[in-house]
Structure formats: structure tokens, C-alpha cells
Amino acid sequence: MCLSIPSKITKIDKATNSATVDTMGVSRDASLDLMEEGSVKIGDFVLIHIGFIMNKIDEEDALASLEVFEEVLKIMDEQELEKND
Image (cartoon, rainbow, N blue to C red; front, side):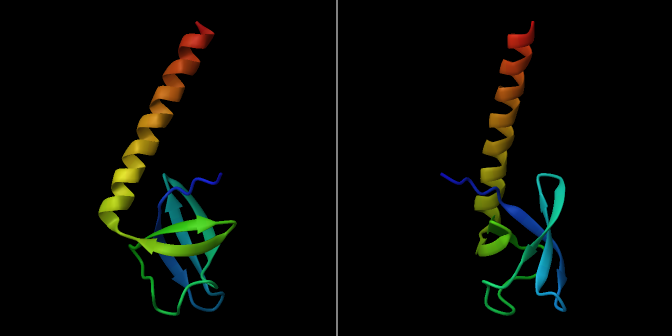
């Protein structure tokens, strides 16, 4: 199973047909080769698989998903701290 964390486009490089995205504070580059030209813009939320932007998603859905991911990470951190006590 693959979980894709919503990522926000922060930069588009038309010369390389790629975008720089922010994924929960981590910046990375992803290919736009599988997207229709002009279908995404800076500020859009997208899902990435193996380095390719696969689709654009609704901002409201993206933010809700990010909240859930952050909650899960918080719980995992708390469990790890309890395990080490």
C-alpha cells in the first residue's frame, strides 16, 4: 500500500517540466510529465507517486488530510516517548 501525503506546489520549472513542492515542511522536486500542460499552478495541492505528480486535489481535502497525518505523527511520537520511559 502506498500513502501519498498532499504536497503544495511552490515553484514550477517549465524548462525541466518539474515542480518544487512542500510536503509537510520538506521541499522536493517532482516531475510534471504525467500531468496535462497548464493543469497545475503554484499554490495547488497535488499527490505524488514515485517522483511524479499524479493528480491535483482540492485544497480543503488536502488540508484535512494533512491534519490527520499530523495527528498520527503526534500519537506515534507520544507512544515512542512512553516506550522509552
